[in-house]
Length: 271
Image (cartoon, rainbow, N blue to C red; front, side, top):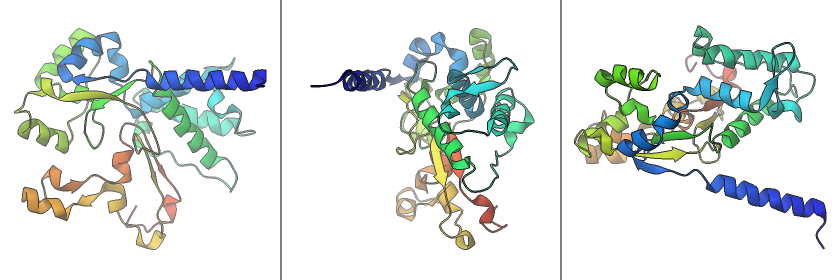
């Protein structure tokens, strides 16, 4: 006979499955503009810092001192409230457009100080947040860096987009999508396929992890990929985006977060 605790857990499993099945969406960019954008244009224009900050706010609340207390870390990290507050302040400032967003967030401290746990909890929070309505992410289907569909809006029309929806579109199409738009769609960006994506470390979707096996022989290709020689013969040019191997950790982390482990141990030339 099942106990009440077991039955309650089974109910949680069923609810989790329903929640993670819901929300899948796919269509053309034209459909995206008509069906998705009007509901929450500001959310769709968020950069990675803004997205992470919104996730932290979603998972916590401000205390009497105005500091964000994240339940995301509450059950795993103890006695490092000041350090957690500084991390939260970094994302808050970066989300607001401060120059701090151009810097790397470097976690320094003794072993067992909670650095890895903090990053793990941050990644798990992003994965769960991407399944919520508030954390919905959309990308150009098939794009190696999960390009924001809003980058398809031509620069000459972005002022009109701002006037219509009240948000600014910033960013350029990646070389792969630009080439695809020209060669496959004849420049008709309204036909470009769009889909909702979900953050997943295991699926290398918006979370990337880089840990050099040997600090003395770290290869930059592990971060940014390299030319795919098998495809060079097909496309005839090493500079063709279709001949590039988009396998680096930086591409996996696009739209999300990149964790670089023990990065200060590699050679200065690599850094």
